[in-house]
Image 1 (cartoon, rainbow, N blue to C red):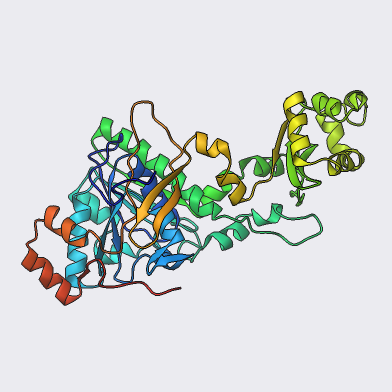
Image 2 (cartoon, one colour; image 1 turned 60 degrees about the horizontal axis):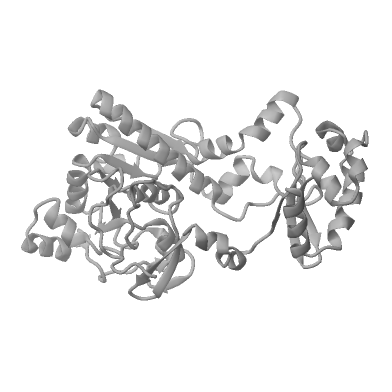
Length: 415
């Protein structure tokens, strides 16, 4: 059932209720961090330029400025649309930021400093401020100011080098990995900084870069390289360090299985070849890794003659770790997703009922906050009136000067 009032952006009831966050970020990484904190009850004010966050133009558009990217990354926020380059717009942003608990931003180093919105300037006025930043390559080194996207970071950060077939080109992972990881890591950092502030009374800077996040994500293969000096090779559909572990074709699709040492005898029994468990070529993990090809010659034809349903039955009977490879249609239609309430439904003024992925964190005594992503400038007047005490006449003057934009007055162009 759709949420009845999806645009009710009243203060949330989560553990961060009463905390105010100003979100200057655009795109994916910063907005995802701010959204995770909004899900926990923080009052998030998303400050957007007159043309809107550029992510409003990415993906399927249900209405101008209402894209799949925006809808998936900005729930539980209020939108204030102002022009930082306008003298009055910049002053408004500074006033709001000086009085908040947290700032989140992912612009290039030095950009916000030009408008008096850097950490040093804001912390001087508000020592309790937590200033959370996401950079591409970090804020130091020869690439500190370089532009970065998830695709280029997957390339620079080594991830593409280990993805793809052994005889094929490096491949990009399908999702925005470094962006989403950086947003998640930064939200953890903000929560830790809030706990520190509780004890010390002082805020601090919290920084994460896309490069930081992607390298931390790859800690196991990087450690393997550090210890052995061997650059990892692309292993295609197979796990580079566990055999058998990978993707196999069945009659009606594909499955993925993992057989660590405790699972190996069970897989042998399921294939009707219990003796393989004691075969010296395959008896332990190291032996199977050295004899990957002979083992594949046994496993590949076995699964090729089965259907996904038959594989699922074997997995249940022998307690194996095997899964079909679902596309999004199969995934979202699966009863496991429904049973755990992993999707939420809400009404969009232009698109009707929209289905969204919920925050994965559950609390036993708190229902997570939820409100639909805001329209561009939807809360401009409300925020200026309630948070800064401006009159309608003052707000009208700011709108006439171009310092601010209210909902419906502008729409971002397609990228």
